[in-house]
Image (cartoon, rainbow, N blue to C red; front, side):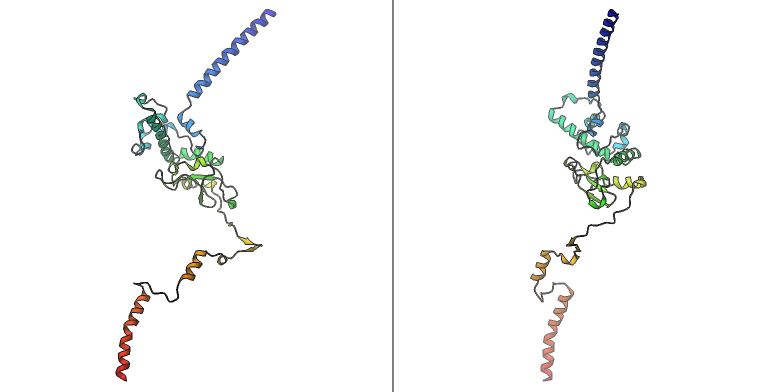
Length: 270
């Protein structure tokens, strides 16, 4: 019995040590084998991105026109797809950093096209339902879920904003990390096409607006005026000269030309 116990304990120790080594090896391999797309979308600040299918990226038709927009295009594309590029070892550290930056830009441009497809819409729907894009900061919208939107489809013109379908307005994202993202990576079309694709997610528009009050009484619109407008009204002289080319200027000139004729008629009659 003692011998069997010792044998089992030894076998268990060997198994445990073997499994632990195997598990640690697997963990290292898993860390090394994380796809670039998964790694990029899991970074803090990239929550607005969804994972683009590799099949979509491998279709050259979907990438039409992007080669001229991104430097080191081939290297960047291979990095996104986890492929080895020929001559990659010859790149300097500075060029390698440029390739990494180009890969992020290229992925963003591909992402803007992908989220307009049925597959992309479905992935963004899951994130929308999980409030991954945040909530509307407007009080009257009661924390309604928002969607990312760009103010331009051209890169480097505007950062990404969030669109609320309840008040039909856009706002800056809450996180400073999101404010640095290019709005072209989502584009101007996405949130509106998204709500047309999923009409069950459309809510009634907000009918409530904030009413300013003083001691419980509503402030009339005319009670609050712009001081600069008041200064302009006070500084405006009475009987100011008419602007040349206007009807008033033409009337004044005709009246002035008629004065000598009237004076001549009076002299003739006397």
